[in-house]
Length: 168
Image (tube, rainbow, N blue to C red; front, side, top):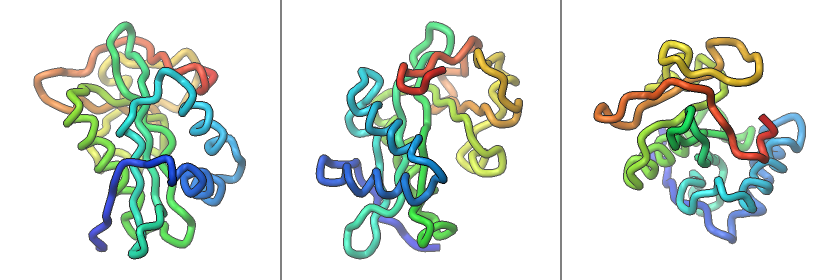
């Protein structure tokens, strides 16, 4: 597996991140979401990470934004994307790992993700329902996952409240 260079997104990466999302997803919803989150108070500088190719161009992307589990501040991982030609090379995993490490370094404690149940457990995510965490919308139980970034702060129970741009 390749050793990816990861770094925080810069203003020079905005177009590349949009292009990654447009290439990775069937609609522009995810790219539009990232653009909307940049303007929202849920945006946290340094928690939008890219993995780059040998020329320093972003090819993978992961974003953590503020949400809440009940009244407890947490982070939401969404979206995570990789340009199609770089999928299955570890570019996405590198961006997710870098984002989670950055969150730990910032003193964050909890992360939730609504995503593919075969992908996120590799990072330590488990079913959120096992911790009493739920949503106000119906989703498959295995799709909502949660992660405590450190053992000293176990996951709280409650309903996840996402930032306004998510529309949930």
